[in-house]
Length: 397
Image (cartoon, rainbow, N blue to C red; front, side, top):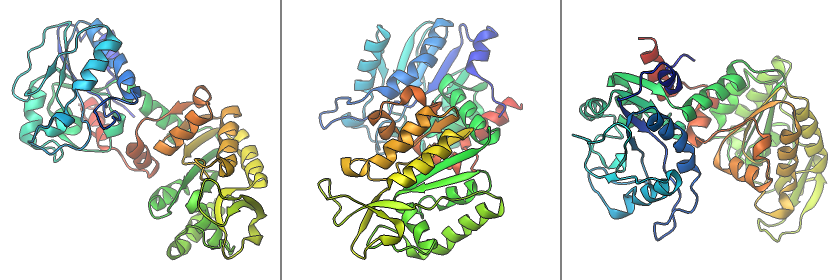
């Protein structure tokens, strides 16, 4: 994918003295008192900011936070806690400007954080008037928020359309490189793990991957629907019987290419959905009518682990069982450990996936951890993200 990269502009000496507008993803979790509970996204935004400051730019940064009502400023929607934390991490003041659409005063070598961009009227609908005003604030627009790359909003798409120069920041560029490596130019075999509660939420992803991957591992409630499609009984497990035909179609598409969707040969069941429920390992053919399937069994986990260790590229989205409950976490842990031990290039994304990676401490053993949940899923669906589209257009002139 051809886009202008911020690092290339800096290397070419085109940033000094310029007004640089960075769209970051600073949408951090907060407690009821507004205190930041986890600052990964703030830390991830710092490389682009430091690059711009060190290059002698006048730097503006903005982000959305939460779900504010456009045109209505409320204290709980403010980026003030973000500004405070960013100042601590950078070791310098980070002033916060509230009304900024019409003018921002910032000198080269200085940094200002612009208040929650989703408060601006027209942000979500990518209003042309707003977009042009934002573009007029800067000489260089830097998109560095992959988590918003699937949204065509004023600060993610409109400004990129009208800014004098529009480029990808280091975070976004890294996502582009990882996605290209995993899906556009993968080392084979390419194995994808797609898990979750419902086939319906990921059907288009499954259909898209069925034409690309050499192995498609399904987990969670999705696997239960595929078990039904394979003629197995699943008791009272979560599934979508009305999507069995679509599951069969995915399996047939894979089979036609000499690929497969491995169906569990054993499972871990319980009579109730609870952390303290008694777990029973059963052959997939022996599931009782009152059983809930809450994890893959050890034989299935070992078979899948072997496939992952032999893979050239792995795409991972979703735990394969209810890993929040210790009795039903072994399958997801086995998958996680196998990915960590594999020589394959691995890319992982999605909130539950990131939680599993953190739980098993394999962050350093995953090739790339994507920070954008919705954006990551849309890439797996085969969609062209609006941010990638407009940056490619601008790079092409």
